[in-house]
Image (cartoon, rainbow, N blue to C red):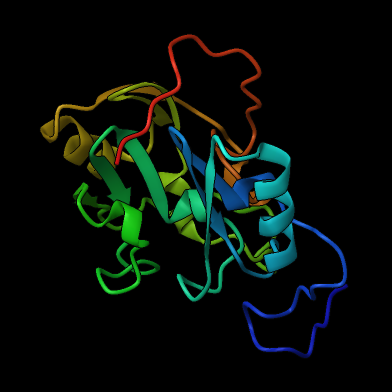
Length: 188
């Protein structure tokens, strides 16, 4: 399933569906799926079949070779995105998101890392959990990002996840929201 010698972003083979939940973001009825070293194209097709016609899975190849889309793109509220300027560009932004307003993340505060050999970058600092439109849970040490989000009318709930980089994931990666309120919407 995994070819360590293949180019970055192409190491996970398409022998069977495989993906990490952090490769998937939901934008109402649109599902952003990052094809990368932790999510293959067959996984995107499987997810589309499992979800049926009510949802559209947008398999994004070439967005960036990293392994988690939730440290590259965050839907803050309908029509507003937080984007990682190192991993995402205007040219590579998925078509269904091109009409959304953008907040470009500032450099992240360098959070502690238990072992310098771990692959998790400092961009895990923008990994936040959106709990309501325009309301996010974010690491309280990301002062500059908090300032930028608040300038855009986003309410930030400050929390600390001490070992986010060591775990290779922060609030979005370590949360499983199994109950939601509201109605399913299409934002296109």
